[in-house]
Length: 308
Image (cartoon, rainbow, N blue to C red; front, side, top):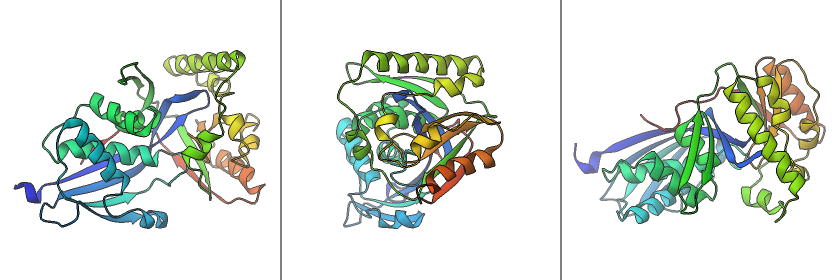
């Protein structure tokens, strides 16, 4: 097969992050997907042409070199001292934009992975997560969409990313409730204070430790307390009407814990039963503010980024 006709197809999962206390370090991949078909088109006049399918909002995405996937490709190519040939892309995206479900992280990882593939260079997962974190600014979503499952991550002083990954138990699902509104990550981050108190920092450190220990020991009954947060969710309640009510929901059968999904505005509940009732309860927190929402019951994706 000549270079001109080479094509590559990737499938990348959505992700939720933070899960309460794990700010910028916890990520969980979900079975909701971005699929990208990329074909080298070296005779094309433009560097990138994009066709989109999926949700109506995706049709407004850039169809040229300003597309996030292509920008991530160019970023990684520069770091690797390689060139990106002219390409055609067909993008099918199930992940809602600006909803706290890792749509940008999936696009960034796709672009970096494709940057290597179109040049015959198979970038390592370590290189991909390093470049993706540098581009995105935090590792939680990009490491989850790349590696699948539950991932805890941190960034070394040299900028490299360290990850610890767990396969997620099949009986624990995510109920994700997304309001019919968007919350850009930069707006959600602007709401956060520059400093935190020692009491709040210790509160979150304790619960991140308990969350990982509970996952390792299958003590899912501990998730309710382990998902409580003081660093970011209280500051974002004013940006997400209904969040405070959702976080204060009383315990009910099947409900293990509730958190803001990433920077929001989606809310995620970890459950082991009773998904429909739990989704309805969280949706009612939005409807009390005259906000419609979409409820999704999602399994966790333990595979991560796949070349199809």
